[in-house]
Image: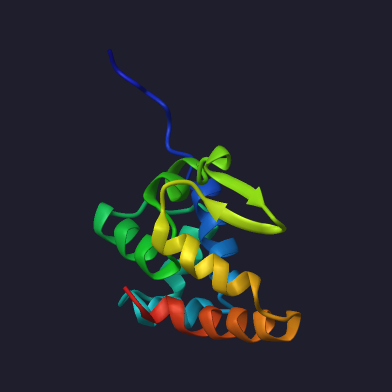
Length: 126
């Protein structure tokens, strides 16, 4: 059985742009991270070009998103996240739960600082 779902380059491009902007990266900065031109990144974001699998993987790694999300817009299974005692926890993921437990103890100012730190550092970690 074949699945002939067309690839929607405009939607993929929009997801790339949205995720890039979450990290406050310019097109030039993202292009430098993945060794492409900023012009090409612009074409991808506008849905004018279809990228190779290698480029897709590099973009997903630097923007810390899954290929499923990049291609189809599928996010994490919402049912995997539960609310317990005013804190968020992921079922069956002890490392994430430990991190979330620590974050739940932070003040708003501390959370803002961690968010800025992660936003700045994550694109450079692959």
